[in-house]
Image (cartoon, rainbow, N blue to C red; front, side, top):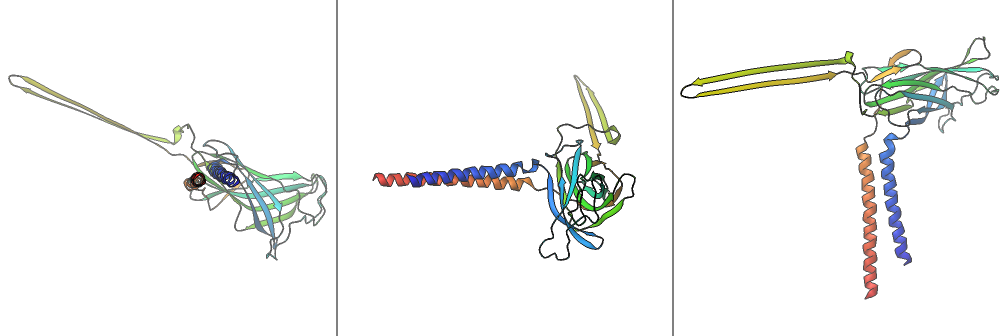
Length: 302
């Protein structure tokens, strides 16, 4: 009895595990879009590892919806084997009330958007709430954000690039550069899937409509001892509407340059197939255990 109960529990656990995996695979595309990666920057001749976080929308956006993508950074410890890397610290003391200003390059690509990527440079500032001693961990580091408005379904790619950190000691004082950093590839990237909207509004300025109408009348009359009249009225009408829409309407903060690159999202069909196979395997295991139990009971009865 103990062995049979244990087998039932194993079969039940396998079925639950398969269902959980399938649910996770199906739900994956609509979970929060974010990326956390450790990237390296060259700043004034030294190399510093930085933990970069790109935070996107919680669910897949739809065309014409406003998307906010945030970029957060924090110093990271050098990895093993990277003897030339250094920990990012405050190169000068930062007093309470000192303002740290951050400017960063964020590259936006789409499918399709244009032959070249769009680079925007948002800026933000943060005020020190506590004093930061020189050679302490660099803090505070402001959070950057950009706002996007996709106009069609597809995949958007966001990449974090170079950045500049400055310190304004007090109001009215001149800013000094803390770090002027250039990215050492690869960059921290984020892919956002824009789902098809349930309804859309066409832009009349971006719509071309072609209408072709043809009408043919044919009449034939034969007069003998009787009259036969045949009339054919054929009207062919076809209407073709072509709408050209831009992929992304971008509302950046700061200036814009151009760069390159893009990312695409995963193929959900393979993920769903893998989860379905797991459930079928768990169910088959349960049936096999039940069959073995039945056979064992028959033998004991004899």
